Image 1 (cartoon, rainbow, N blue to C red):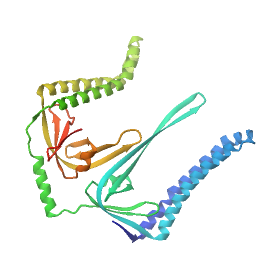
Image 2 (cartoon, rainbow, N blue to C red):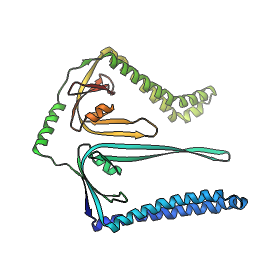
Image 3 (cartoon, rainbow, N blue to C red):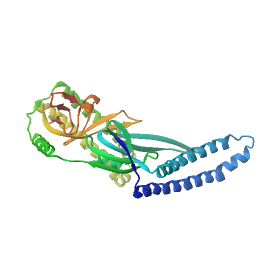
Length: 337
């Protein structure tokens, strides 16, 4: 549900305050472009009078930055002059965090290098419609909550955000029942062939990751020992604590795997769904995570869409270790993670 309401003086002031960082960014950007022209491009242009291509590209970039800044100023100005805001109210039906990673390669003479930049964007789905929000609002709301968000229509600046959590007597009673569910004890079940395959797969995946991480440190240590540089080994001993710690974790996980195969049972833990989130990225596959009262678990899309906050689940774990094998709904539908 979207409504229009007049802007308050505090909200108008908040929008005007957004113009200050834009002005600072404009001055900073103009200084960078001026420095680039004075120290770099002026010499190039003087040497290639008949080739205006460099200046055309330079001017194109200036126009892009000027256009972005002008649009931001125009959007805030229109919101202030129009004098109204959008009020979006409804239930949070989903949450999504998008991670975008970009790598830039630099080369200057004999020097070259790369830099990686990671940006995160947060979205709330209110009554099924996606809205971009800051992290503080994203972390405040949970799936199933009723929220009220005031937003400037042109600049999309969030002016106010409120999470409404009204509790009735029926909700109090439901919470009490759920608490009793968490106190239940379920009998251990025998490990199936699929459980054993999951245990084996997780162990070897963790082993490969840790060996790959340890290999540079072990290579350096081997080189120092072969070269009989014992003094350097002593000096850099804190660095070699990394492979030692990872080696300890590998041996511990190996012990867990052996004991779990001998015990051949898994124990059931009753949990409640407290929140859920979709994770998207330009580098990795989409991941959908369900937050429970006893840890987080990645699930398949079908189960993710089916679960809601407050649903009861049974989480299966091996006797030794903290990994999660599968989750089961109250309809006896089991899903491996």
